[in-house]
Length: 363
Ligand code: NAD
Ligand code: GLY
Image 1 (spheres, rainbow, N blue to C red):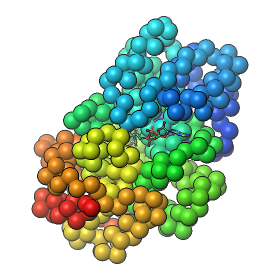
Image 2: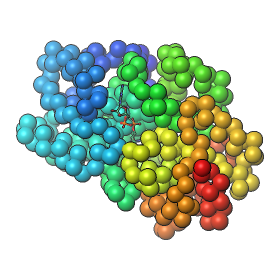
Image 3: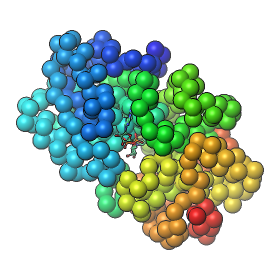
Image 4: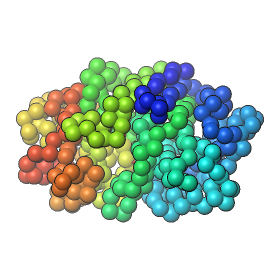
């Protein structure tokens, strides 16, 4: 097991990464306020892993309430959130109850938002089970739900007390979901970690073959990058750069997810196509070469990801992008690449270049 720290002062917390961690109640019990927990999962993950986590906790004296949600991005909404509150109230969970998210980013975002708002906030633990959740969504405290008009539009910052990243859970993850997680892994290389990008280029075949050592290294390096960025700009308030850089490809990607209807494309797939659009726009602004854009495209394709977006029409993309949280005072602040390995936030991209970048990256 390796342990990283998210350095957030009194809200600092560890990320434990390694195999077999679901069966380590000793790592969890110390992070509970009282011996009472509600494990939120979904109907795919619960049959695979709920008892592996719950049974040792029960044996350690923790009273467990299980909340099993429907599966999928299309359920990341008010109705599902309310189901969590219904059970927490029916089971008389009090303020000392810790909410534990067991699942991918959808469960993590829903359970985290429930923890942030139930009785004005209860403790929260993340137990991620997808690659995307292991490398990104379980760390950093962003929680929330989608609105029909925009992705992740309602939510809260609510840091977990602990992230328990059991790499064994990846054994059952479908290949398409593994690829979706790799989009966020590649993101760290592109925005701030050139040596990691080179490592990914050398080791993509191993990652796609689920080589345990390669996956563990990629998870650890991704979490280390995320922890550093979050510690420096927890609430994404830095004027330039900061946490917003973690959203490379996301503004374009959110337009794809919202435009097609949540769940049609996976989040990581939309981010991948959006990353190519961001790279192409960076080229049009004179920052990247054609070879750089080809390099981005090639690595994403080798990770089994789409490298062009659906033909929604540039105006629809822009309309959805206009609802993004990166809009500040009516101006769209995009995350672009000043060079490979160094991202910036930029609000001055000429609209015609943005349109052209989108159009040339749709198939
Ligand atoms: P997901 O949660 O929908 O999980 C993907 C699929 O894999 C689901 O069908 C799930 O049931 C299944 N699954 C999960 N673990 C499994 C396992 N071990 N074995 C077999 N199947 C398993 O999707 P995701 O890609 O994990 O997360 C995407 C979500 O995360 C999006 O809603 C996105 O907005 C959000 N997100 C949040 C943050 C953040 O900082 N909070 C960051 C990135 C993404
Ligand atoms: N996934 C973007 C962030 O956590 O800020």
